[in-house]
Image (cartoon, rainbow, N blue to C red; front, side):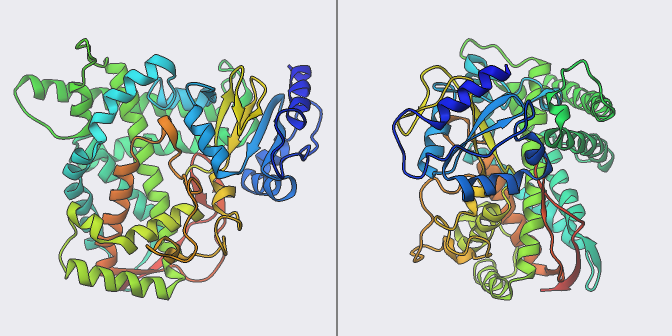
Amino acid sequence: MFKRAVLIRKALRGGGSPVAGQSDPGPSGLPLLGNLPEFARDPLAFFSRLRDEHGDWVPWSLGPKPCLLISRPADVNELLAGIETSFSQAELGWAVHHLLGDGVVTSTGEDWRRKRSLVQAGVRPRQVRSYAKTMVDCADDVAATWRDGQCVEVHREMTRLTQRIAVRTLFGVETAGREEAIARAMAVAQQELGAELRGVTAFFPPWILTPGRRRLRTAVVGLDAEIHRIIAEHRAATAAGEEREDLLSRLLDARDVDGTPLSDREVRDEAVTLYVGSHETSATTLTWTWHLLSGSPQARTRLDAELAEVLEGRLPTFDDYARLPFTQALIKESLRLYPPFWALGAVAREGATISGRHVPASTTVWASQWSIHRDSRLFPEPDAFRPQRWDSGAPNPVPEHAWFPFGGGPRTCLGTRFALVELALTLATLAQRWRLDTGPGEVRPVAGLNLQPSRPISATVRSA
């Protein structure tokens, strides 16, 4: 394995069609470990350093696995478009599979195509419209609990909100007890999964049960028990003639072209995948957005003006989403600076190329949203919070394929539309009534399952 990695690394350093700025041999590494220690210590800084010091085409090693970091948007687009043809979905590890099962994110080939078509029907724009009122109602409920001068922990509040939205839109569950049971199990699972992704345990075989893996397994057992109870309740309600509009009901009603439904296990896997993709991603993005807004009085003033003009004091609806371009710009800029998914990877198959340049088979090709979104060649003042860069007619328009917080190509996140609508409508609902002053002090991002704040972000609630 190690000898093969060395040969692939040499192949990446030379040969193929030359591309400007892409001849650097890449960083040196340790025997067997390669660049794993530096990657595990701080993957965000690692990817940024590779881009800045070695260019847009950088061979490196993750343990014995040969890797390649690409940073040109056109190359990233080619990689994403080639997944399932020239490239395979990267192995996500034991922890991810144990939580998500064989859902649409982890499956490949014909199984992936089948599941994607069945799940996609539940998150099309028409279906997202039907969830918009739940999103706004949940945000309004949270807003009603805040008081002027109150101190809140922002991520905890946003998690409370997005958990409620996820459980109600996905499972149709209304009782706080059911929400909390699912949320507790999922919180443990996501914490342990993020810890494994950052450490060397990701390379351990499935039969090595570390303490973290044991905690994850226990959490998943509790999560599965609750979800299977909800599935049974949905089936009983359907048999009694009750119609439901939640995502779980749509998964249970989905049929293949030959009329075959998803099994209970498949429904469970897709439900958990959708929950993970919607809840934690949205909570983290809203947390960063409030923090960025707190430090930008100009952006807050412009947001207030848009909300006053468009909403005139009422709650937003789905139709208002298109009428709130600056609210959308705030979300896009937050996703640029703090993309929840900070990197993605795919494994080259035989004959794979990018920009006409040969990529040896078995090489994991990485693209980092974090480093590309903060590339000064693509985004002037890349570390600055500038939502106006998303304005129509902005002087430096965002380059094509340079912004990809939800991935791209055939395996782009199915919940992208759901997430963007949820983020804009919930932000509008809360911001109409409240400002959150997070105060001074640096908050660094930590790369786990999502890009989390390095410390709790406390905020003082003020009337808008």
